[in-house]
Image (cartoon, rainbow, N blue to C red; front, top):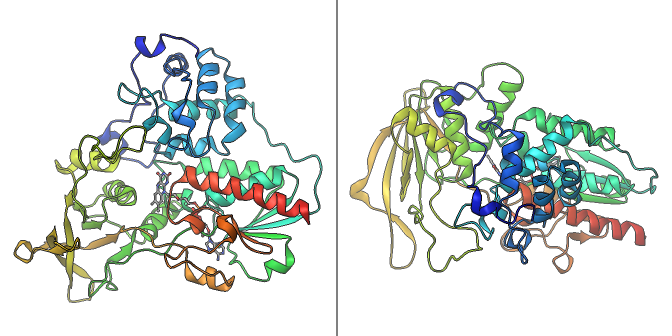
Length: 469
Ligand SMILES: Cc1cc2nc3c(=O)[nH]c(=O)nc-3n(C[C@H](O)[C@H](O)[C@H](O)COP(=O)(O)OP(=O)(O)OC[C@H]3O[C@@H](n4cnc5c(N)ncnc54)[C@H](O)[C@@H]3O)c2cc1C
């Protein structure tokens, strides 16, 4: 505990957001960094708790040594703090930007203003890169074992990184034209600038990891490599199941976000655009919010976001005590930006789509929406006399994900549980001899930090398997 009275003397200050109307003009980082001196002060607010819930299973899935590196950071011993951080965290530059910071919700100070662990982590890793404290270090010796990792999202990258450092030769196979999974094609640039992902890929390549892009994984890999890890994500999107879903102007959130990022990186106009259109986004979660922020930057004419569920309470309910993740109403950056542009929160809660109506060319022109009510049997049903038509030239489906894609799972003869998750041996990461899995492919859609933790845990299992052979 760098300063025993830090949490009493200083209030929590996060990295500030850039002003809404300013940041809406570009896709650059949403936040600005605090100066170093203020960062040290923020680290001094960490209480170094005897029982640090931040690193327990309620908090950080990586079990980051948060009180230890906050203490070192507060004393200005930044290089040592970084060394403690990267003992458990594979990619702090990703989690420092996009993690919802479970550790801060579990912090003993959370009701008074938790310590700013995520911003502190980001500061340490960026200082590390800037000051050359971390540099690629290929392993001194190779084990002679070869591992194929299918998918280059955070779980695949974490597994590849760890196995490579253990001395195994790793090839990452990715069907997309750029590596990173949802870090590249999913999470928008303003939340995670793509040069940050590219920097880590270059770092891993310099340490000896090989990336094969534009390549679909083939089951023959199982014979070619000593172990193969399926890290293909949970891309099977939930559909609306309303007539007309296939018409022009209706698309899936990840397709929309991917095309926008590709266009940004290739300096061209996106082929799917909200520019000048009235947009409906179906889904009030994080993915829906990223679509809100992207549509606003593209210059949409109007925007609503439909959410089936009622708005969460403003305060924790009695059955949701600290240190659990608070199930309370959150208003994210896109929704705040929408309030600036259109003077209102875009979300309509307990509302769904009933029908889509095409124009003369077969593209979407209007949609019928209606309020929902929970029935005695627990199901949600539309209240028909609330049905109304709204104009819509672009409808984006951000209604969640249903698990791993059947094509990859079937190609590798992976049996699935009734809920669609791969069946593994004794709930480990191993599917059968030579075949393993990690990340969203194994667990269903989750978080970057959980995918990284799962990739690391899988790498440890694969290492034991390889060394026993
Ligand atoms: C729009 C959006 C925004 C999000 N924002 C956040 C956020 O802010 N914070 C957060 O913590 N989490 C966020 N998430 C969740 C997070 O991105 C995922 O949980 C995480 O990326 C999962 O990592 P993964 O490695 O398991 O899979 P993915 O990131 O999905 O990567 C899987 C990769 O496997 C490749 N692949 C699949 N099949 C094959 C095959 N047969 N051959 C070759 N390659 C294949 C895919 O192309 C892909 O690149 C977001 C998710 C979405 C959709």
